[in-house]
Structure formats: structure tokens, C-alpha cells
Length: 267
Length: 266
Image (tube, rainbow over the protein chains, first blue to last red):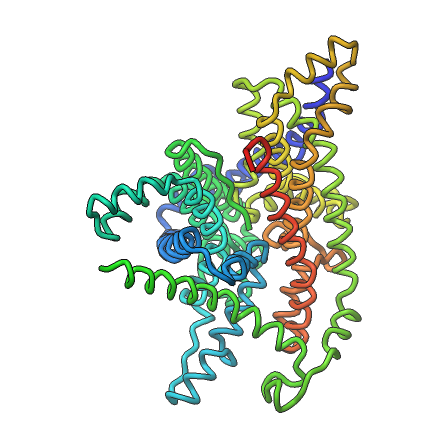
């Protein structure tokens, strides 16, 4: 009886504000003029398919880049102890709770028209270098918020790996790259899959960064937003949201089934 | 490749990554205290004028964000802690489904969730136009973090034996929850609470769809200033945000590490 009351508030809240709204989202998506064929329309409309493809590509690129950079840094910080190490860790994790809008603004300061990179390249090389207001800016923005997440996950796992295994491989004559390929990376695999999936899903659903950088970056969340606000095409906005939600959810479930650990995307 | 060159490559990548994350943040902080960004900080000097203007223009968003974060903490604690206790007591198939279901907001993008809430409750004006609407979105999004954080601590301690001992001495269910489970779960509650507050203050994806011109939160105000204010004011506002979020984040990481080290030899 007492346990029932423990669950009661959660069940009431989740039904009212999660289950019912999601059901409503789905029903709203098929209540437009097109009815159920709205999902066929998404698949046959080149604009939506192009934006889905662009979103997947930029998210994939970010995931690969974040895994490469953050894993390298994580292994370095795990294997070496030196003064200033904790300072490096702090400066690699502080953007963890920055919203996408702030990161968009930071990318404008870095790669915008009055940005640092453009200032340096205009003064030193006499060429303008502006990358913030495009897919490139979006890529760097997503990389900015993916690095801390991947780093923390990989470091937590790397610290638990048995250093004796690496020593054993070395004493048997394995080169550094062989040790990395045959010992370290297989040990890190669950963390790499988990954090890679988070980075990918977060990039797929992120909205704030694209919103700050430019209104004509056609990633899927931006398309949903413009369908909803500018075109007032509610049914299409709902259908695309259902599609986006399903894609990220299925992906995280799949990653979870590979690793057996719980995974959370946020941001 | 020798061990020496491997070291050099790793070290350079780490430093480059640090620079990539730090430099834009430093640029933004400097721009917020520069008299004129286009002349540069050296030529035009340092000022707190822009921070003052941010306070005049946007202090309501700061108070609202703090209020919503606090409300979010209270509600996630009231709903989440008993639920985590229940999930720990009955670790069966149904519990897994419940946990999976309430964790959906972690994998469904905020934009989709906000759209779902708008579709169902958008027409109830009194609710739609108030800060409560945003609060509901934030509770939805942060609840899984509170539940998981508390559940993680429960699963490392042998709560069952403690409770059996108390029950044999005549303690009721409520007493066992209040006097045994709660005190033992404290590190998880603290870590969960700091996570909830940090995430709520920084939340944008949901909030942008749920807010009205009269219910702007800090990140919504930031987006607004990026679009319409001069660069120095936008930067000063960002600086105010950094001052709020970075200490919270540090506390959150510290508390999470502490909660995770329970039950392990230190």
C-alpha cells in the first residue's frame, strides 16, 4: 500500500504531461488535410528528405570528431599525472550545461563576421574567413557541446581499465598503436558506443545552436520550428517531431542494447 | 610510432581541444566588460556598464529562471525520491518499464516534447500563459536525472537488511522510508538536486516553445539579446549566465562523484 503511494505522484504526472501529450502529438500529426498520408508526403518531399539527410550527416560528422578528440584527451588525462591536470579537465568540462543558444553565440564570436578567426585571417593573410553562419559553424557548435560529454564518459571508463593489461601488451613487444587497437579501445568500446550515441542523438535534436547561427540552416529541428511558427503547418510539424523522436529514441535503445548501460541525451 | 611521438600527439590534441572550448568563452567574457568591442578592450577600456544594463533589461528573466529551477527541484524531489524508493523495492519488469517510460524525455528532443505539450494544453490559456507551463516542461525533462541519481545510491547500499531490522523493531513503512531510506539516499538526492537545478537554469529547447513574452527565462532572454542587442550587452548577459551556471556545474560534478564513490573503497 505504501509503495503504491510512492509511485502515485510519478504515475499521475507522467500520464498527464508525458503519455497524453505524446498521444496527442501523434494524433495531431494525422489530423491535417493529408491525414495518414502525411508520412508518405515526408518521404516523397525532397526538402524534408534533404533536411533529414543533412541532419544525419552533420550529426555523424560531429560524433566521429567528438569521439576522436575527446577519447584522445581522455586517454592522455587518464595516463598522465602532472601539475595543471585538473585545470585541463575543468576547462574540458565546463561547457557541459551550456544551452545551444549560448554555444551558437560563442561560435559567432569565434567564426562570425567580427569573429576572432576572421580578424586574424584578415589582418595577417588578408583573406576573410567566416564560417559561423553555415553547416560548418553548426558542426563546430555541436562539437563544442559534445566534447565534454564524451570526455567524462570515456574518462570514467578508462580509469577502471586494468593498467596491467597495457603493461603486459607492451612487455610482449606491442607498439603503441597496437596496444591502442588491441587492448585500450576494446576495453573502452561500451563507453565509446554509449557516448557516441548520446552525441549523435543530441546533435539530431539540438535546436538552439542552429537558431542562433542562422535561420536558413535546414536541420530537422529548424524545419519543425519553421513549419510550426512561420507556415502554421501544425500537422507537418507534429509528424516531423514524431519522426525525429522515433529516430533518436530507437537509436539510443539500440546503443543501450549493445552496451547494457543506461544512456541519457540532454541539452 | 614511438611512445614519445604518441605522447606529443595526445598532448597537442588535448591542448587544442582546451583552446577550442576556452577561447570563445574568454572572448565572450571580455566582450561583456569592454567599452567598445570593435575598438578592442585595450583601446576602449574596461567597464561594468553593460552588466548594469543587462540587470535593468533582463533581471526579471534571471529571477524567473531561479524560481522555476527551485520549483523544479521541489517537484522532482517530491515525485522522484519516493518513486526511486519504490523502483528499488520492486526491481521487476514493471519497474523497468516505468523507469524506461519516464526516461523518454532524455531521448526525445525537447522541441518534440514542447510541441506535444502545446498540442494538448495550449488552449488552456491560464496555464499556457503562466510560468507553470514552463515549469511542467522542466520537471518532465529533469525528473529522470533525479530518479536515476537517487536509485543509483539505493542500489549500492543494502537497504533491505536495514529495513528488515527496523521492521522487526516495529517501524512502519513510512518510518522506514523517512528514517532509513531518506538519510541513506542523501548523497544521491544532493547530486540529483544539483543536476536538476543546473539543467533547469540552462534549458532552452523546450522553454523556447513554451514561453510567452511575459514568461521569458534566462536562456530565452539570451536568445533574444543575441538577436536584437549590441554585442557588448549580449556578452555581458552571457557573462551573468556563466557566473550562475559554472559554480552550479562544479558542485554538480563534485556531488555526482561523491555519490558514485559510495560503497567503493576510497
